[in-house]
Image 1: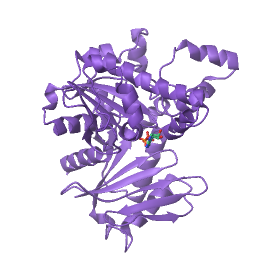
Image 2: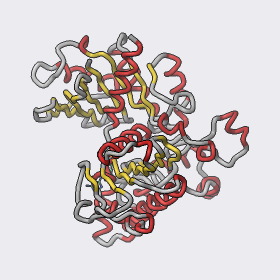
Image 3: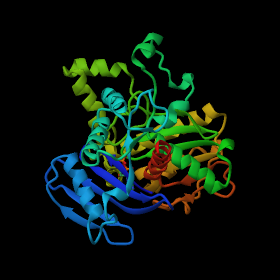
Image 4: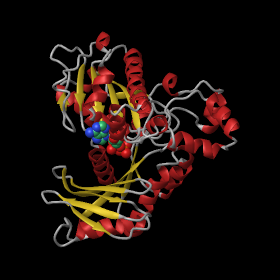
Length: 400
Ligand code: ADP
């Protein structure tokens, strides 16, 4: 059974083709710069060098066509015919309260996801473009949506409600949803496997730190709290997102600047975070480099990120009545040893003792705490695609 996993961003389309008989990846790739100059596909057949092809890619439909061509290509392709493909799984960011698990994509599901666009304006439109592109190219193939919000549907009301009048929740479903659920699910389970402990017995804090970052409290395998909320904006500062702010800042700044809600939302989503504080970049590597060169705003941005994550870890340890495991994942969590060190420093009172040598690792599964650390600290590279492929297989099989 071969399953294609598609993850669309506003100008990108990532894909992985799995052979689910052994969960091996047959090919993967990335279409970049969709709709802008310099578009290209980077395609890798497992065991071969990547090939890069520059071509005009005005939209996601053409992007998917280019992916299909690469998968069927005589030399670096992996499929003889599209009939070999059993199903396509999509990463979809926001499914509201409607879906607590993955589902087969139908017109009703598409309508529900369209309704969620205002909740995730940076992501849902792109995810939907991916679904439309696949539907047009492969109208008969089953498609499954795997939602970033689904894993967090186990949060208790005290964690997901906001202190606004209750009727707003009833009327508008205003609540904390949380995101990156697929990643928090995967790394928490993987950490338990690595430690050879039943997940039901563990209190785990998972730190997904990439361009977008969220922290989650995973108690007995279930999400009980997470730092993102109604939208992917709150929590710790991110590449360009502000993270938590006093909500009254928004009306105050809108008035002072004479800008409307849309413009304010752009400021909070696109001009804030590491970029807004440092004035240098949204990319932590650039911020670290600038901080090392003496840029005090870059240093401040780095400190704000680490301080914010540290506070969430402490609060989630309190929420769960203790912490057994701390996991770092995604671009920053997997690669930035200095960020992990800064976050863990000062958490000794909770039983966190980082081994500086073991912490010197990038993108590999590793326990990075000392032998005598009561909290086990791990780097676990995330694998959202594998979770999506597994869910797609399960749901597509159920359907047959
Ligand atoms: P996305 O949320 O878009 O999937 P990623 O998970 O790829 O993002 O994470 C991107 C972030 O990871 C960027 O801020 C980048 O600077 C950071 N990153 C990647 N490699 C390193 C590294 N070696 N050191 C520090 N930060 C890194």
